[in-house]
Length: 351
Image (cartoon, rainbow, N blue to C red; front, side, top):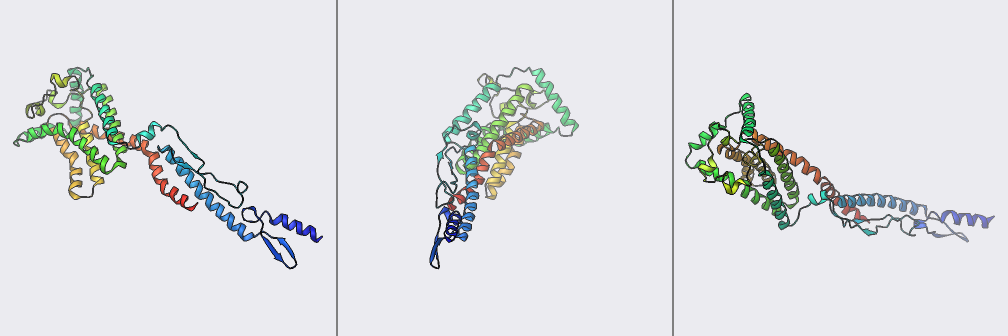
């Protein structure tokens, strides 16, 4: 009877020891194997903590892979019977290599030369497609008349007054004409270089916003051609041609320039995005003041030169808003990966 009890106890407590191993304990004259129940409880508790931490680490790795980090490590939980003596093993079982998706590529910053080549190529394509518009002046002026009627109904038609006031200031028309060309191209390019060098993690969001907004504007240019104020026969002066001496309708620019691509105004849309980004990322008062005032300056430029109505500026702002929403959706997996990274690092430290 005593031998049978001894065997039963041995078989019972052999399953309770930590890692599946029994602990010998001497009791009186007979030496029996008694599992250390407290050690088993501690082991189970460590196993639960390890599993929870490892689960967080695995989720973080999956998020990183979705966000364009294909080399994220994946851990494997080892069950107690897989390795005796330990409850959880953090293993590097595989390094996943897969082609990154278009979404992950778009949400990640690239080297400066790659970004420059990409944006230059896209803008060149934009200019070529925009220049293929074949709208007539009569059709474009018809759409302009509708915009003017809407602004008059809303008591917003004051573009002629703004231009006349600007022409009373000496040298201001020339300044506005030069600014119309320089700020849109050189100013935006300088901003993108600054952003890539100083806030590279924000570059994909801004870049994608510009790309989507430009695509939206391009489709509207083709479907809804609008004559700018200087070509609408409403008494506006072509400031860029007369004061800045740059003929936008010349043979050199005519092949790539669509004079009826007025709505939406990407001059204002780009300026709005540039100004708000500078204002939110910089800390100096002067830099922030420049950022907040830049869209207002661009509004004066586009209206004072007779190139856009107020309605066009609102359209540019809406195009940027659509671009920002689309860019935020593209960047969502990368944002989740950045949020999970601290959790993953702490989980790895626990293992």
